[in-house]
Figure: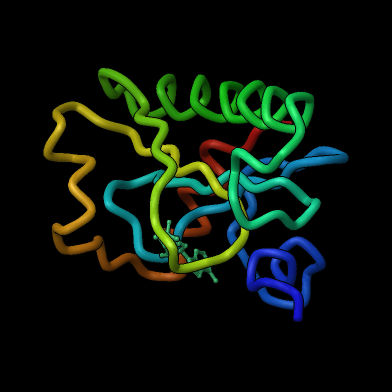
Amino acid sequence: MASIFSMIIAGDIPSYKVAEDENYYAFLDINPLAKGHTLVVPKREEDYIFDLSDEELSGMVKFAKRVAEKQKSVFGCKKVAMVVLGLEVPHAHIHLIPMNSEADVDFRKAKLQLTKEEFIEIAESIKVE
Ligand code: AMP
């Protein structure tokens, strides 16, 4: 069965899209640690990120870099954290989290509660064409 992220990529489940190309897709995490918290995924479904080919992995990081540059310019944060962790969804993904301190990237803290309108506004503001 397709992963929830493959269903998002196919458009079968809605998402707040930030960027897309032939091989990768970026969208807002629905349980964000910070405004603009984005997930980057390869369109080819692979559970473990280090099972991607060298080309797929380097392309994914380059794609994530473009998103992170946009996040940094829009939010004026110190850095954008790039985090790979978790076992929840068996589809490789990079978390991109605007950060001003290491506490901003603590996955144990309460997630932000945003309205649909806020998600739409944030996704629009960091959209990468
Ligand atoms: P993890 O595998 O621990 O990195 O967690 C998967 C991440 O995917 C979590 O941060 C979830 O909030 C996020 N997530 C799960 N389902 C969706 C969805 N439908 N849209 C956006 N983000 C999602």
